[in-house]
Length: 257
Image (tube, rainbow, N blue to C red):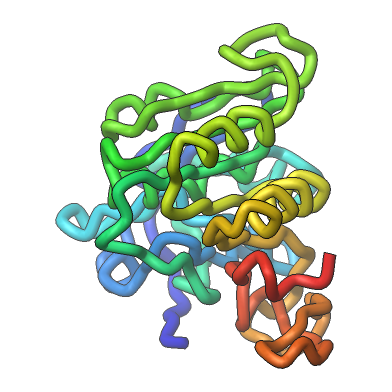
């Protein structure tokens, strides 16, 4: 895993929902290496621990990365106070990303809440071959649906309370419908209960699936061993792997739910 550490300038900032922000960072050498599904590890000014944030966009021509995050504590609140022109202390790109399938004709990109942003690089890769299913608690959390449209992917928005979107309820309902119509692959990122439900659907139907796990991380490179998760190998033997280094992306059948 090749990664770099440096201070990189913020070139764009947007507030895209309640307490949710999009930043574009100029880091040509990082953008040249980054892959869909990887993440960056950012050190907020005045803090000792970094915050892992998924990569939401890769523009190698411009030499930029896009990240999208929600304020979840004092660290991310400090990050949200940064502005264009400020330098972001970042280690990136980190982790094992998604497997790209050039031959796939139709894939589903399933995101829940702040698990929606890492689906964007996949939407850029697959374009019209992708359907993005995004789940949110209510209309206040909805983000990035226009971005999927701009990339050519069909966007299906679900809200648990039915306050917005095409579907009232969970992402599994439209996912099962897509699988019944024929689907080559499923990619998912979001809360663990959602990932477990998506994995169960895919395992039951024999659908290829990769999931990106969310976990607290300290070092981001597999040294502190703080983000271990239970998995099983090809022989069914239980083993502990690290989300930051071996993941965050795993095959759905590898994870011990």
